[in-house]
Length: 283
Image 1 (cartoon, rainbow, N blue to C red):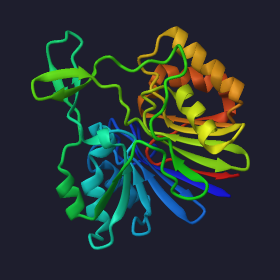
Image 2: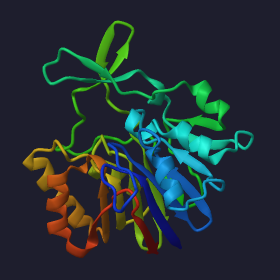
Image 3: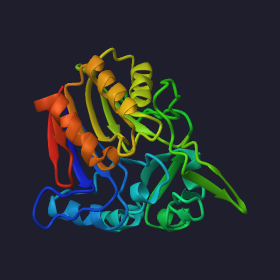
Image 4: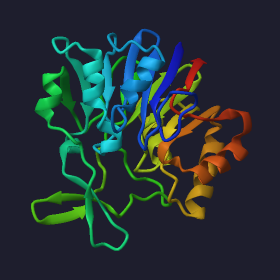
């Protein structure tokens, strides 16, 4: 089995003329199947895809990791670049992805909208075909979405300033729509994460349960440690060591200081997964 990941959008860029933005988009090719995990926030993923000579005409599936604009906002740009409105592309997401998501300011006085910045009809007109499910979706015999990730650890928690606005009421967003992509390989579980708002260790445990893998080969993407306290960071590092993760390529919401800590802890197993980074794995 051969897996190739190409990062189209991320907080940093790896080379000249590539663009960066707060967001994430990772193209994943597993043998003959191509899946896009998220679309970034704006036109950056489409811009970088052209510079990276990536042809989107053979794209099989897009997965939305959750309904925040920095993971979904680039969809229309990518669909226009793909330019195949009569050949729908499957988009797998949780039903909550269309909820009115917002972010509460630190002082609690403001709520900033951070949900999907276009209508479902706009996306469908350009060739999007949405498949909404709270359950895992098997894309192939070896590739599956996480579905809802159970909260099983005692050190991972959901941001309490992530909210959902319903008419005049604002409640905490439990981010049930936080999805990851799992690949079952001969060398163990391969995780592609958008943000892992519900915790990267909870996410990995979900992947092991779904796939039947007993080892973890790789974790790629955002692992939401930028606001983590020391206990959560230490516990996460300890868990990744126990899993004996062979490749750790972090992005986006991991945070610069936690990423530097992970780089020191995992040495040559670690890499910064910036926009423009293409990595091949033989498993």
